[in-house]
Image 1: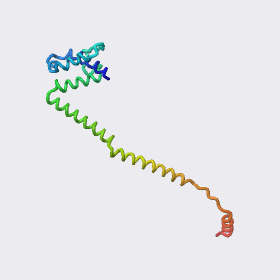
Image 2: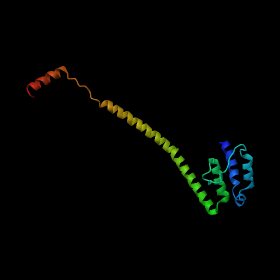
Image 3: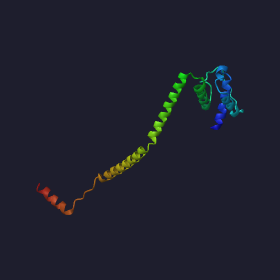
Image 4: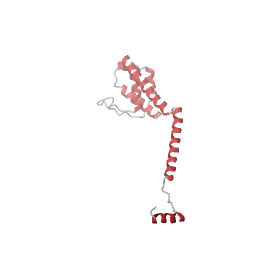
Length: 154
């Protein structure tokens, strides 16, 4: 993953060559120097000027870096606030999902529910076994009594 960032820095530097100087001046020199210093110099990346930014074959890390550059240096105050609000909303959603997934109260409740399901399953199996037809054998003296009852229609 660290290797991808070095490649992403190279992609950022190559793309920034096509950005107007006015926009380049908004990016701190220290950031640009860091990109230059940490980029993978052996990685070959060419910008296709006939394609838009979205159509370029970029690494996800490159897109993330440009998102930060846009938010912090190129966006208008209104855009910046909207972006920060969206990021805050996304973080809250992720935290809510984590809280629901890893809630300690729910973990114990889930375990109890699973145990209850197992107990219910075992009880159902026992009832099924108990509900099987039982072969009833008539005793010898009962056969004689029943024979006479049939004979006399009682």
